[in-house]
Image 1: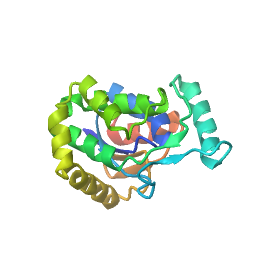
Image 2: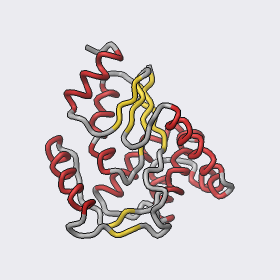
Image 3: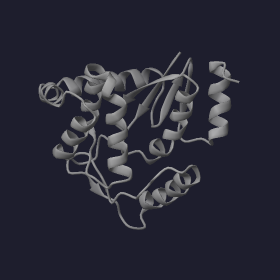
Image 4: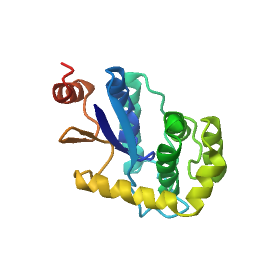
Length: 196
């Protein structure tokens, strides 16, 4: 049984919901993560987070959510454009799937814990290399446009199952979008997957 998950690394709700995906995996469920570009209109240089702005207040809420489940979290001061990054992670999933989980975790930690710029080429390269991914191959293929093409496919597949935000899990014929209380998530998915 495989569950599909769509993710964007700049989505705070998706970061806080990583515990939900971890729970599925603890139950022996395979979860395959796909890319979803949540904010394609972000400028290439990204955008600073305004102190006391709407997003900053969302981060305050996410900090509480993360603290309640023991997930490390530090408010970022900038929202990067993730278009290129998401294409690269699609390439990792296709070309080096055995390194995907380490790349995925490295990117999440870089943005939400370490305050690193995940749109910075040096940061991306470091995370790929640390995860054991074939960095040169991945980046060469990305430069040829393959990452963008794979991201377009992932986005089309997401829209086919009515994914319009992240996080979004496709469990059998049900799409679950957003951060829900873990007990509710466990009831929904457990019933469908025969875990309860």
